[in-house]
Length: 289
Image 1 (cartoon, rainbow, N blue to C red):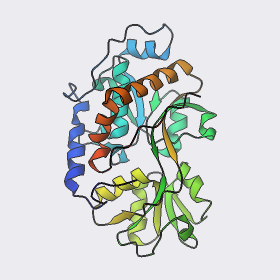
Image 2: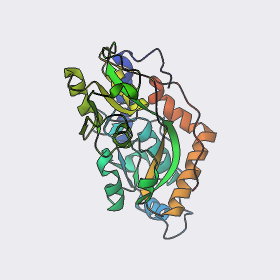
Image 3: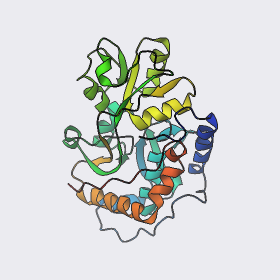
């Protein structure tokens, strides 16, 4: 992961990002994805039901800068949110028709299984264990697990091998929690990554671990306090979670993702959110399992 101008960036960038998210309330902004005429879906499919309802329930994070962060109007903003808007627009649903639910790492599968949300777009790593209970479209982005430390890296942590004998904080139920267990069992697990920042500030933990892009957002939101080690030790393909074995809906979302790669809307979504801090990557290949 290469950051634009390092990780210590003016808070102006985040302020601009947050303010740009107010378009979800009321009429769509000029930058909102154009809404398709979604009248030709096969009867009985999830697409037909959502298009007829004119609304969709999407779960996302509310505490992760750049990807899913609660804006001043109470609605989330970020790259994951923009991806949700793109999918909704292809169902004929405007941004104002999206009902956003806050999802944390531990409740993403339950929210999908019990029908509380139609989709989860929440820095959600695709893995085989999760595929047993939910389906995934995508990936639409590929991250990597890294470490967040205090500015100046006082403990000289260069990678996960340096965590032996040190406490680390992550989120309960996350892929990051499972991955870091290979390097240390001295883990503090909480419900959100933002709750790991206090223990890092106080010295209770030596590092916070999760995907590099999430850590970059946290560091950018708190300039001068933290830095990313920038030595990713896993690959984390982000997928869009949906009901298990809803093959038609998964294929539809995969088609929408590939179209967004081709028509530039994926790049536009990135550059208006995470692209304020991170360079624009190449979209990953879709896994049509």
